[in-house]
Image (spheres, rainbow, N blue to C red):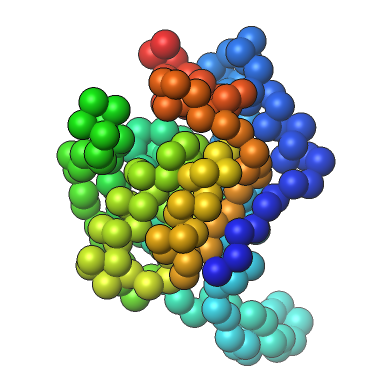
Length: 207
């Protein structure tokens, strides 16, 4: 699958605001929510649909209706902020949760929570994860989804490192990755730079 870079000026402008250390938590949350809706709009272009005939107040009309279930999978905890705004847009979506992180001491990923909605294997799955650094967490997340039968997987991130992007796409070339920027580097502590900092801490104001 291709990597879709969402580089329109509005998204780049908002990304600049997210990067800014002076952006306060209320503004950070609002901007992240706005960007989440926009990136989901782009990712939803690939959803299958079919023509149906409906009755309007004046006549009948042929309309397109999405004919496949949608499942949102926020990677905790930063991905939770993305899920809320997308649910406002698509309230019929099912929501699963995965708690997983890369332990820098073990040099491996650690999963601590995994709960998926019924029928997720047949759904179009949208993984919500604001940042991809090394790619280890992203790969482990997709591994788990494939273990339970998921095959239509879209990964939505605002920022990825070139290393993380390339690693994910090498291991899982059938996943469709959507990102706003793929050029950040990884520092010695494993954070993206210039990056956004700790997205979960900034979103929940626990810095």
